[in-house]
Amino acid sequence: MNRTITSALLIIFCLFIMNCFHQKENNLEQLKSLPYISWTKEGEDESLSGVVTYNRNKAFAGYNLFEDRGTGMYLMDMEGEIVYKWKLPKNTKGLWEYALLKENGNLIAECVDCKNIGAVEVTWNSGIVWKSDLNFHHDVELLPDDSYLIPDRIMTKYKKRNVNFDRIVHISNKGKVLDIWSTWEQFATLKKYHEPHGLDNEPDISEELLDKYDYYHLNTIKLLPPNNLGYSDHRFQPGNWLICLRNVNLICILDKDTKDIVWYWGPGELKWPHLPTMLENGDILVFDNGVGRDYTRVVQVNPLLKTITWEYKTDPPEQFYTYLCGSAQRFPNGNTLIADSDSGHAFEVTEQGEIVWDFYHFKMGGDRRKIFYRMIRYPKKMVDTLLKQSG
Image (cartoon, rainbow, N blue to C red; front, side, top):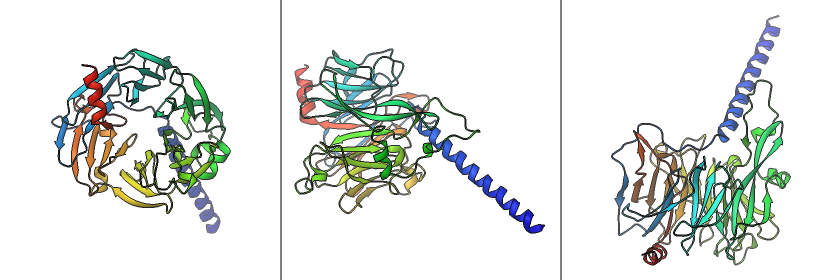
C-alpha cells in the first residue's frame, strides 16, 4: 500500500514538474513574439547624456547613425553633435527601426508594424524615391547592382497557432520585388540545423493563444565581403549570404547561387544572437545577447575550427545585459562599437577592452531613456562629402 502511494505521489510530482516546464516554455515563446519597446526601464541616470567619453587618439573617427524608435533618424559626430536628421513619413502607427545610408546620401529606412509602409528610400533632402508596404524588419543589405536584400515575414498556421515565418526579399532600387527566399519553404531543411523549437508542439488546453508568434525571428542578412578564407574555401566566398535566426540561436551561411546552407554555428553557444558579420581575416563577429544566461557578450569565432578567438564581456558579466536588441561593428583599427540597446547606450572598445568612446541616448522621459536598435558608424570622409554637398 505504501509503495502504491509512493508511486502515485511520484507520478503526480513528475507531471507537476513537466507542466511547469511546459508552461515556462510556452511563456518563453510568448515573450519572443512581444513587440519591441521604445524606452528603457525606470531609474536611468539623467546626468548621463550624449557622449561622456571620447579618446581621440584611440577611437575610430566617423559619424554614427541611430534612431529613437519614433520618427527620428540621426547622424551624429564623435563629439555628440547631431549633424543631420531625416524627415521620415509620420502617422505610420509603428516605429522606425533601422536604416542604411548609401554613399549618395539616400537612406533606406524600415518601419516595423507600420500602417501602409514597411520600408522607404529617401534622398538626402528626405524626398521619397520609393516605398513598399511589405512587412520589412531588422536589416537592409545593399548589393553591388544597387538592389537590396531585406527581411520580411508572413504568417501561416502552424501547430494550431498563427506563426510568423521570415523571408528575404530581393528588391530593386525602384522598390520592385525581384525574388524571395522563404524560411517556410525551406523549413524542413532548416530544422536539421537547430534544436527542437517550443512551437513544434501543439498547444495544450490551458495555453492562452496569442495573435501571433515568431518561429525564427531572422534579424540579419549580410553579404560576405572579400576575406582570407574565401580565396580557397567556396563556403566563404564573397557574396554568400550570412543570416541570423535569433529564436533558434543559429547563424548560417547560404551559397549565393544555390541558397544551400554551407556553414552554421550557434546552438549550445549563442543565446538570442544579433548581427553576425564576417571580418577580413575570415572570422565572424556576433553580438550574443545571452537570454537565459543573463549577461551579454560579443564574440569573434573562427568558422573553420568553430572556436572563439576574441570575446568582450564586463566584469562581473551581469553588468552588461541587453535582452532584445544590440549590435557590434568592427573597425579597421581593431576597435569594436557595441550597442547596449536596451539601455540606450553605445560604447567603443579596443581589442584589450578599454572603453575609448561612450554615448547615452539624449532623449529622456522622466528617468527612462530612449533605446535604439543598432548604432552603425559610417566613414568620416563619406559623410563629410555629403555634408559639404548639402551646404
